[in-house]
Length: 479
Image 1 (tube, one colour):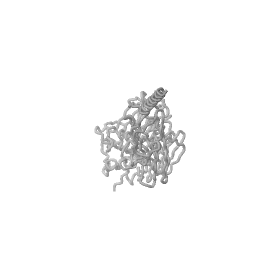
Image 2 (cartoon, rainbow, N blue to C red):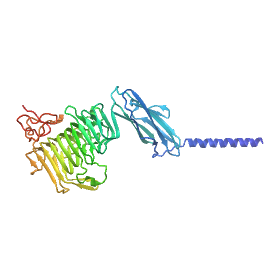
Image 3 (tube, rainbow, N blue to C red):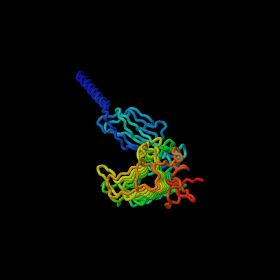
Image 4 (cartoon, rainbow, N blue to C red):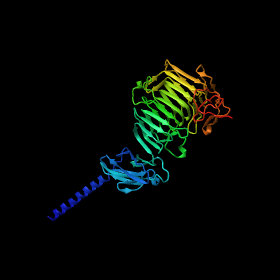
């Protein structure tokens, strides 16, 4: 019996040992597949609290191991490190960097993130961003962190109807904003609209911008550092969608976008037929405004209706203005100039006019009922000298354009050019300093015709006594 008990004892020890060994093996068995991915309850953690005094907020998200084996995260780190305004807590432990964090099979852990904002302290960007980096089997993943850094009006994917913006706080757009159909947005003088990287400003209803000569309405990127002042392509642009109507813009400044204004290019209707005819053509009256430092175009119009007076467009990566697939356009006392910049190379004509546009596999052709430029400057330093591109390749039956008393650089000629100064430099005062007033000896001075535009782009009376108006958006006084 004693030997039997001893035998049973040792068999038990062996079995327990094997069980312990097997459980240890299971505990140490981690998935090592390089394609293994963590799952997150959110790919962006957003702190949408607007702080008017010192404050903090905490958000959380979960990391999931969806596999039947344990998963080891070799590193979890806050990209901004100790300098970040965000703080992190992983499964109950605070820190900036964590190593070898294990998640059991089909289990999860929490990560808590806290932010503290002092709107009266060291100036922060309007939108503060950081990220948390995860490395698993040499595979990197990120969760983005976003917080509002200053006291402002913030809009994130907002849909607006019949709102009026007053000049009290800055307006910051994150992702996008839409003025809904049959609705309006009125923006009063002095308002500053800061567009976050890649964001868009869509209008399906009606946009009213009501700046004044000494109090412009300004659209620009939301990076406040001086380095970003002149950098193009920081946001998408203002898009007047097909079906929108009645837009009025005066005394506005639009900069740092891909497109300053898109008129009629985008639609909520996927049917290409929406671009035919003028039933859905957006109409815009714009005056005394500036569009510059755009990665692509200042204005890109598709079968739209635009009435522009005292408009200055310069420093665009492609054409300053594109009038495509027909439409109806009048430009009075406008200056379209392109000499490139530190960030943009001028290689496309300043102005392009066509009766067609390609949208995917479809070619949309419309009549060009009118494209008239009066007392305007269209000039640049493109090598070939061809600053005007005109194409009736769509063979629309109506294709009418006219340049009347303009200063223009072009290789074209014909009855469409009336009393123009062709290939005669307008002699801008200081291109490098962004001064597009014609010099005192420019042919643009006193060589326009009186078309009833009483002031120039900055509000200077036009014309001076006993003279004719200047060509372009500026009226230059010469003693």
